[in-house]
Length: 127
Length: 417
Image (cartoon, rainbow over all chains, first blue to last red; front, side, top):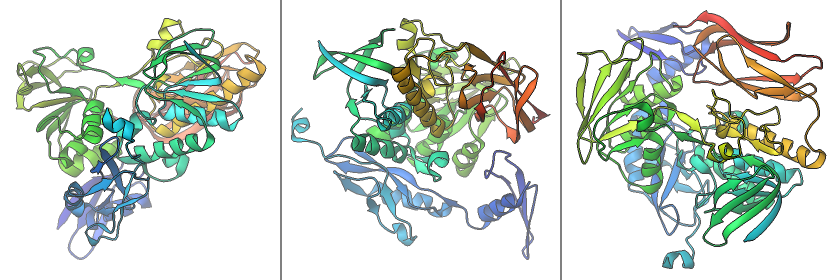
């Protein structure tokens, strides 16, 4: 039997939700509403998270491009996504929404640029 | 000296200033943004995490994406922008003196001014951390900028003092970038940040949160070598015998934000001692006619969406001021009642319509009622399952009636702790 306690973050009530898995079925207690049950089951079975980090960008200012996943990825694969993105790079100019890494790790989620980065002009290069 | 004439001059190109300038331009006025950084966006540009824009856009954006939306719109609408431009002084006559390397000294003559300078982080000196002064003591926002925009890691192992949202966000960010986070130490009995950040930034990564604890000493001469933490009593005094040394090379401070009003103070704009920003009316106008303020320069908001809303509101007020002069009628005070720390705006006028009130509670309550009264009449009573000090409460009033002596807001409910 497994017992897990979660703080539900669906609304500000922050219910302490307890999930018990006895092998056959899963029961949830402490939730103030239906959404709390769904939250706990999700967290237990397949927690998902957004990926946000930066990748190197050449020829622009600043030298880092913030990126964000178009949807959530399994929490267990978050660090693998980070490693993949650590090795990635982009080249200015970049537009917000440009795909930086498509279908990351085969998870079906694109990683996109989170802002524009303009190409550095000739004048700035010489400064 | 170069002189620029504009209808609305906006100081600061962060979320408040962007929204204000965009709204002013859409309403047919000329708007000019003065920004000291090399680009627009303000602190949003270093907020690469998501959670922005839920109220205004109905989806979870990163801070950068939220900023990009406004920057694109500002460009499309043709709002004038001066970046790398530092405002030195403003006058009650709505002249702005600024300096940049292309124009030298610039004088902006504006029909109305909107202050959007945002806020600053409290530093080590403001929380009285004694001891040596080694490298490696940073505010959370500084660490955010160093990692997310400049691409450096400022240390290998961190202790975080304070559980404000930026500190929690940075606990996760540092962990993802390979900096070990030994723990978060909070002097108060409750976290300073939102619950969802406690869960998704600390619990997800098994980072311990120690409430009722503080840092009492920083070790190291040239570089931080460690800190001593201790438990505190109910008066926030360290308890002797509870000290513990933690080895680290980084101390990150997330100990609160203060509206930035160096420019406002010089011309004696009235500052609310609680919010530490200008006391404003329902149009976000300060005590000086024609000078408005928006966003975190007024009071520290929890959501950027509210910051943008106050910018738009200030722009509408500014344009009405330019076209019709200051509104007539006496101000009615807005009073922070039971369990209310402050309310923005601090004053309203009879006849004001669609007034947004923003307030913070002093302590958490469950099954709470937020009651707005004018004299003895209850104008509005909103139910909230929970109210928490880190989360701002928003109340919309359709119209302020004549004949009232002022508004008073109380929050009652069951004790949550």
